[in-house]
Amino acid sequence: MSDDLREEIRSAVSAILRRGEAGGTAPGGFDGPLWTGLSDTGFHLLGVTEEVGGSGGTLRDLAVVVDLAAFHAADVPVAEAAFLAGWLMVRAGLPLPEGLVVASLDEADGQWRNGALRLTGRLRTPWGRHADHVVTLVRSGEEVLIAVIPVRRPAGPTVVRGENLAGEPRDTLVLEDFEAGDAVVAAPSGVDVGALSRRGALARSVQLAAAARAVLESTLRHVTEREQFGRPLARFQTVQQHVAALAAEVAVMGVGADAAVLAVDAQDNEDLAVAAAKATTSAGAQVVTALGHQLHGALGYSREHHLGRSTTRMWSWRDEFGSESYWQDRLAAPVGAGGDWWSLVTGGGR
Image (cartoon, rainbow, N blue to C red; front, side, top):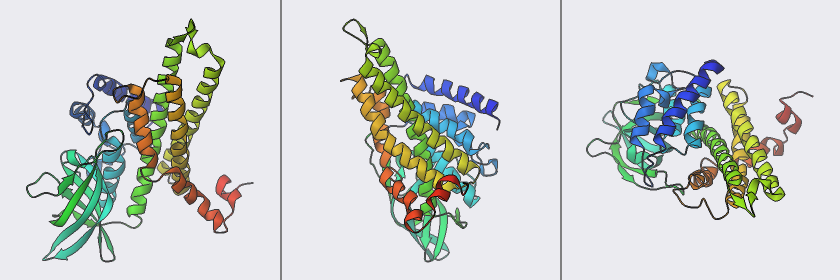
């Protein structure tokens, strides 16, 4: 899609999300009306090919929706549905079933018996309690498979509920000799838990950068409106210095996330770009949340405050799919193994 059309997507999705902000949901909740608004327009499956039931478009188009949902702290699993589940379904060539489809983050153990694939395992599945189907990787001997599991059928998998610090569902599906059904195919080369983790790291990088932008916006509004000693906080030099440091960190995070989306969309040095983006955004989360809360004073710590809704997500997303330390090690590994650091940074040019 063109940049102009992408701006139209941004405008339309922003309007849907702003309408959804008035309600809000309880911890571990799912904003059904907001999800309906996104799914009725097809925005929830941008970047997923029409051949499997998606809305078409590119990864850059999908990133716009994921970015905006994170910026508004929306209680909807756009990243899990399109970035992860949609990506697996496209690789499998399987049609998307009706309802909400999310991806598990783990492999199930699979055994073929009497022509049926039986699954066993405990699968970390964000938003699993709200899903109609879960797509998962399966290890069966030396073979890696992709299977779609119906969650809501009778005798379906057991869902053990969990939440991250922001109250987002981080559930576990328990499978005990569970029959997978007919939606099972061999995973293509390169599709495994590692590839799924990189995909998740890219999604979280986009979300972290967007949430950081929300913290900056909230902070600018607060220091402009709040007065101390008869003048706005923004007039104090120390506050200005902290705001400048916050804005700089937000800019770095945004550049890293955008560069990774462009690299993956173009299939150009994807591993390096995602590692750099997740390392940068996870590290930046610590700086942004600390400065945001410092500049808000005692405000913003409650779940209801818009600042807290962003910062608790950042604290959670920072470690999901690998912390900054994990991805920094991944970045350094080629050099430690005798690689050329200059070529790694510049792409080989001098």
